[in-house]
Image (tube, rainbow, N blue to C red):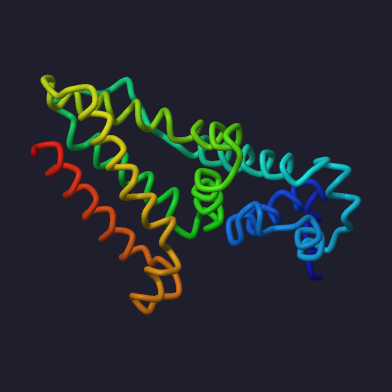
Length: 206
């Protein structure tokens, strides 16, 4: 006997559907009707659960940040010059796996990137909740490896490491087309990870 699929609660269905559409089309390019049509719910259901498109975007972003943060395993308490290489490698590997692999819906990263580009400032600040601890962690890592580094330089290095990873999120479609791929394979993600680690190490030495 075939098992029945577990019914997804309406609120979660709307969140996930809206997230995909917001990531694809942006906040301005997505309407409540589009979300209702794709989720096979009525507009009244979206208004009942969220009140407005802006609130729905905010709740969708909170949903994604919570999911990503729950799977984030940065351990800032173990930073030192001796374990700089292993800490950096673990950080980049975990973030590439988190944001680029099939285990995470591709629209998660896309939604956060969209939030920075076109969402209202309060929404952008919400998106920063995921990245701010990452920046602080990497700054601390840079200072441990290079004690005389200037604070601004440490911050710029942290931004550089994160930006390299985010590039593969934001430009996923372009990269897949350019490399004749349908998705990021484990081997491709491994090569990307190793490249980012190599460039990041060289950047800090310079």
